Image (cartoon, rainbow, N blue to C red; front, side, top):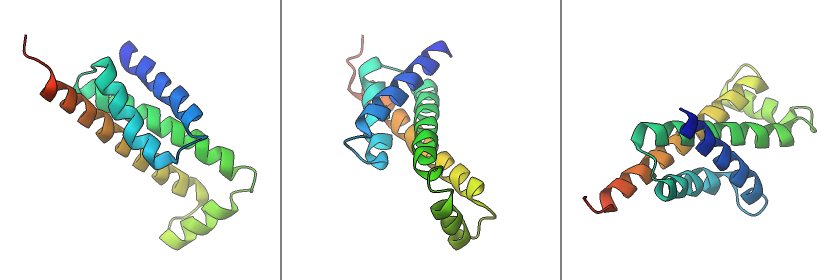
Length: 119
C-alpha cells in the first residue's frame, strides 16, 4: 500500500512536469508503464498506482483549465454528452483517465514479468 502511494506520487510529479511538453493522453499511457517497468511493481499494485496517479493528475490538470473559465467548456461538453452538469463531465474524464493509467501500469507490470529472467 505504501509503495503504491509513493509510485502514484511519482507519477503525479513527473506527469506535472511532462505536461508542459506532452499531452495528457500520452502521459497516461507512457508514464505509468515505464514507471512499473523501472520499479518492478507487480500487477495489482501496478494497476492501483497507475489508476490513482493518472486520475489525480488529470483531475488537477482539468481543474487548472476549467476553473478560470468558470466551467463554460465542461458545461457545454456535459450538455453534448447528455450529462447533468460539469462536475459529472469532470468525474467521467477523471475515471476514464484513471482507467487508462491503471491499464497502462498493469501492462507495464506484465511486460516486466514477461521479459524478466527466471531465477
